[in-house]
Image (cartoon, rainbow, N blue to C red; front, side):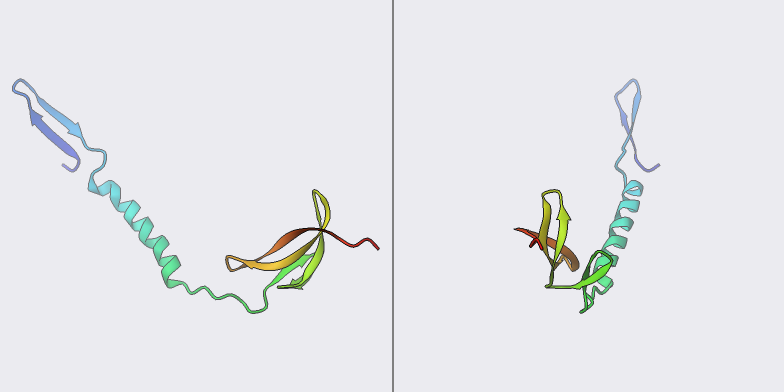
Length: 97
């Protein structure tokens, strides 16, 4: 039987159950292979027209907009981070006018 170890001590046999036998490793190996397949086989293509959203409008990558933050309104620039667009908030306050 998988995972069982029998050892004789003279008077009794000691049976130990090995919790780390091969059948328990199989789901882990299969899961790792499936995850690797997603990252290695699936092509990652960034759209050339990536945008950020502000007040319901698209803002092209590289453009700036005024965003409300916890520190008040600040200038933010639409930038790419790990193949996604994201706002990079500056310390510069938005112009009042």
